Length: 321
Image 1 (spheres, helix red, strand yellow):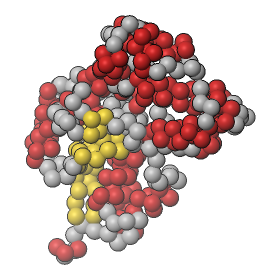
Image 2 (cartoon, one colour; image 1 turned 180 degrees about the vertical axis):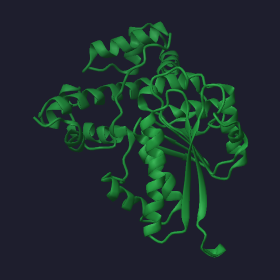
Image 3 (cartoon, one colour; image 1 turned 90 degrees about the vertical axis):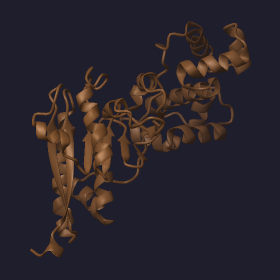
């Protein structure tokens, strides 16, 4: 093989940290192996070299890996564990070293974003993680601009994915950046997997946070739930909890991450989602049940928040009877 015909080698480090999701670790490894097969069929000159790096909690199994710069580093999802919440310095320092010394991508999926954020690389940058981690992540990393409506968020060399199965979206995105158009769709055909665009907003549930420690705001949240579907104005809500309107706005957003109006809209739309999944009632009926007489305005709000029409949502998530 001549020098000109040699494939471009792309080194990929998949970090298997304690309690990382094994299906994601080995699934990513196999996805890159499949990518090599597909790019070969398409006559492209690229070869991914995936390698699983085992981190035992204190160090990597092979110490020489500590200084090896990889073109792609992936922090996969983790199962429920304390490890990714308090990753050791040895791991975060290695991730930071990779970012400083490699010209490729530093990636995370789901809980892996906690490790990436702990390295300091996400400071004042956009990122995503699993929607259920919203409150926990915001408290731990308030400087990160969290965008939970997206499956993938790209910030230069940093690429984050949300959701436990988002490692597939992440893997496809990485492959697409190093190969020619048509590679990922063909991989999807082999895997019988949809490679089209989707958003995390499709799957996101609104789970009000009550662990913020502000008792008055927790009381305001209780008032919203007890008055639903007749939602109060911000002024009325402030009066119910004996706060000035400006003070309520400031404390409510600090505690929950939402302005009161947006919080109430998301609360109402989550109720609409529940009714769409549980019943076959027309959306006009559901809109009235959640306090909206104007079904058209309610539908527009639903699409803005969920990224799907009510009909598309029901088709995707209602179980067949």
